[in-house]
Amino acid sequence: MKKITLLFLVLGFTTFMSAQCLTTTAGQWPTTSYVPSTCDGYTPNVIVTDGYANEYSAVTVTLGQSYTFISSKSTDMITISADSGATAATFGIGSVSWVSTISGDVWFYTNLNDGSCGAESVNRTRSVICGVAPSCAPPVIFTIPAIASTTATVSWNASISTPALGYDYYYSTDNSTLPTSSTTPSGSTAAGITYTNLTGLTSATTYYVWVRSKCSSTSTSDWSTFISFNTTCASSSVPYTQDFESATAPNLPSCTYMINEGTGSNWVVANAPSSIFATNTLTYSYDTNNPADAWFYTNGLSLTAGTSYDVTYSYGNNDTTYSENLKVACGTSLGSASMTTVLADHPGIADATLHTETVTFIPTTTDVYYFGFNAYSDANQWDLYVDDISISASLSNTTFAANKFSFYPNPVKDVLNIGYSKTITQVNVYNIVGQEVAVKSINDTQSKIDMSNLSKGTYMVKVTSEGLTQTIKVLKE
Image 1 (cartoon, one colour):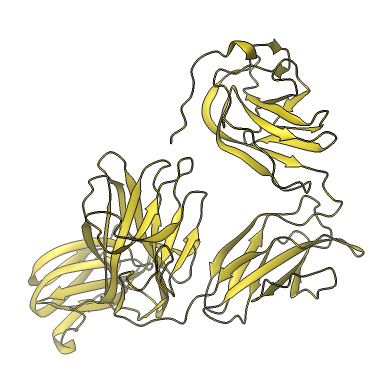
Image 2: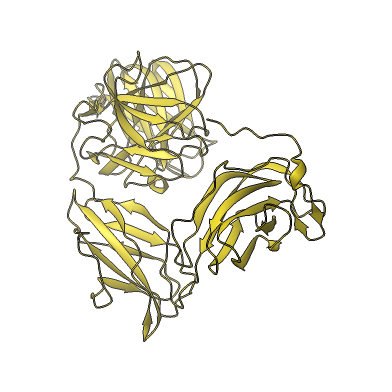
C-alpha cells in the first residue's frame, strides 16, 4: 500500500524550541514502533526509506545503551524525544548520538534546518546504529560488480575504523564452517583498497566471501558476515533459447543470473502470471517504496565478430494504469557496468499487451557475451514480464559473392562507395560497441554512404541484398 501523508497538524506535537524540532505535520511513519535488530556499534538499522521532513519514527530503545540516529539528508535537523514529544533529549544536524535514559520508545524527528522546523515531502532514510563500535570494526556493505565463470570482483565499503593495514579476505564454497581469528586468509588488500579480484574459481559454483579489517599488526576485526555469489556456467553456443519452462517458480532457470543493482524487488519466475503470459514467465513485481533496478542475464554466449545475430523476446505488463520500464543490453561480463551496448529501451509500458521484439547485434570482437534485461520501473507500480528469449545468427548471414562486391575508400573520410552485382536494399552502420548509428535504404546496385558526421574510429557496415548480407569493417578518419 502506498504511503499516505497526513496533512494536518498534530496538536500534541507542536512544541517548538530554538535549535530543536518537536514539530510534525506528517505524524508518525512507519505507524508501528521499530526495534533495532543489530546492536554491534557500526551496522545501520534502516527504519524507513521513504521518510519525510516534519515527521517522526518511534524507535524502541534500552536503558543505558548507546544509539546514533541518522538521516540520509545530512542537513536535516534531528531531534530525539524520550517523553512522547514533550521535550528534546538530544538534537543535532544530520546525525546525533545518545545514551538512552529509558527503556521504551523514543521519537526520532526529522525536520528541515530552516529556522522554523520546516516540512519537505521528499524521501529520506532514517536509520539507527545501536551499540558502541569496537576499536577495529569490519566492513558492512558488499557488492559483486563483476562475475564470470572462473573470476569475480568483490568490493565493500570502507570500515568505520579506517584500518591502517587494509583488509584480509577469505572465500570458500562452504558456509557451514565460519572463519575464526585463527583462519588463514585467502588474501589481503592494502590500506584504502576496498575490492579484490578472485581468480581460479570453478564455473557454476556458489562462493562465500568474508572480509576483516587489519587495524594494526596486533589488531584485526571480527570477520564480516558473508556475501555469496554464483560463478557463471561455461558459455553456450547459438542458437540459444530461454522460455523459463525448465524453472521451478520462483527460482530462475539454471545458468541464468539475477543481479539487483538497487533496493527494489528481484526478478523471479512466475507460473501463468497473467492472461497474456500463461506459462512460466520472468516477472518483476513492484516494491512499494523503492524503484526497480534489477537485471536478469542469459548465460554467456560465444559470438563471432562481424556476424549478425537476432535477439528476440516478448515483454509486457499487467495493467493500463501503472507503467513499467524495460531496457535490453549486452556486454562481455555480468553486471550493469559491463552492459555497454543498449539494444532496446521500452519506457512507459502500460497497455497490458504482449509485445514481441527482434533487435540485431553485430559484435566487433569474438568473445562471450551476456544479454541483460533491466527492470527500471518506478516504485509502487505493478508487474513487468519477459518471456521467450531467443538469440540466433540472422538468417541472412550468408555473404555475397566476393568478386562481385566492392567498397572504397577504406579508411574513409566522408563518403563510402558500395557496389554489388545485384540490387542493394539497405545499408546499416554500427559503432564499435554494436550500436546502430546510421541506416539507409538503397534499392540500387551502387550507393554512396555519407559518414562525414561520424566520429573517428572503427565501424561495422552491414550491406543487405536479396536476403543476403555482407558485413565489412571500415575505419573512419
